[in-house]
Amino acid sequence: MEVNPGSSREVLRRDCKVHMSQQSWPQCPQLPGLLCCLLSLLSLGFCLLVHYRTSELQTRVSHLEAERQLFSSWFSMDRMEPAIFNRVDQLLDEKLKARLPKIRVVRSVPGDCLCPPGPPGEKGRHGRRGIPGRMLGKSALELLT
Image (cartoon, rainbow, N blue to C red; front, side, top):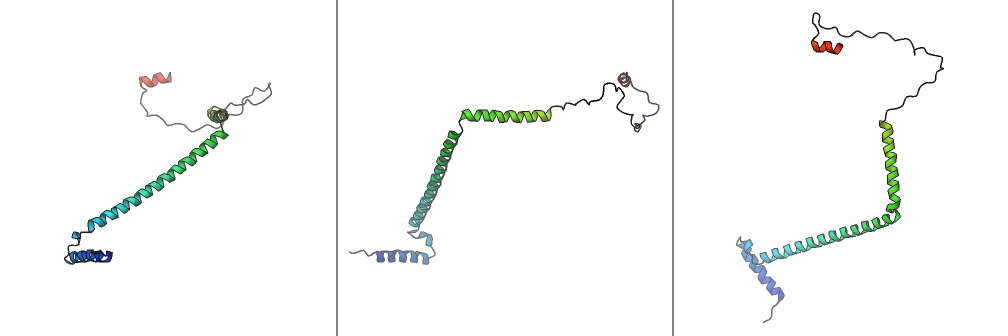
């Protein structure tokens, strides 16, 4: 008894066609196998994608580590520490100069001149008047004296 591959396919097709013609295509006997194969292929593709991304990240990390070693060989801590401290000192000096009060320089005038700096300016406006007939309280009197 010879099994012809073409004939077995015809039998499967015929079975599915018979089942599909009866409006019950989910009962096709090959459907679970096809779904398993499809899910297996999808999971295999996902695994390959994850493997590719992982290897890509691993190469990036190895390149970064190599750059770090190269950079650390250029600048050792003995050289970096004084440079950092010098820069920090410079920044602190700038900040302190900006926040400290400025020292006024005395103008140079001859020693025999004792006159005031100039005539007084014009008088300003008068302030608001108080309420007439009102006496100051005890605390206000204390402030005045």
